[in-house]
Figure 1 (cartoon, one colour):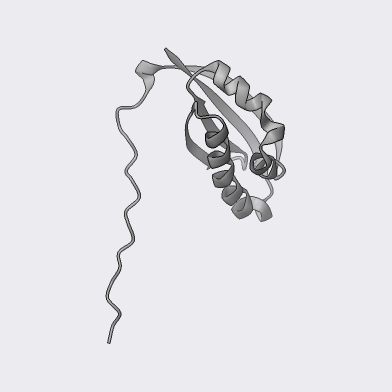
Figure 2 (tube, rainbow, N blue to C red):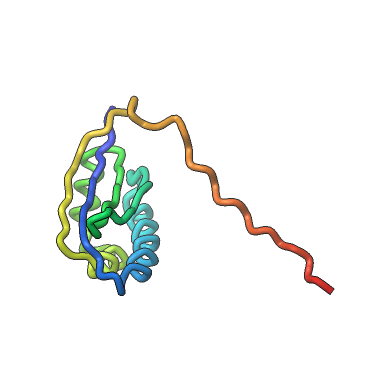
Length: 117
């Protein structure tokens, strides 16, 4: 079995970066709810040339195609996409044997300290 990995390259105006990142979180949740075969969206980073790369991983190529075909029905995804330009998408195949055995740590729960007196 292989996963379908979409490597998405794009630009975001500096003034829109924070809004883009917030909308990206909402878009990921929306796509996952509508397309449970979205396996992971592990990386979004700015490259040294100012462009961005985002990685979306689906269980299969068919699952990626279905999500892409449904984009008009995903308003949070569209709101995120409205902030990006110069989009290039490269679909690749990731064999299951290439999946890292290292799992990202879970976010620590906030520490609640007693109020000082």
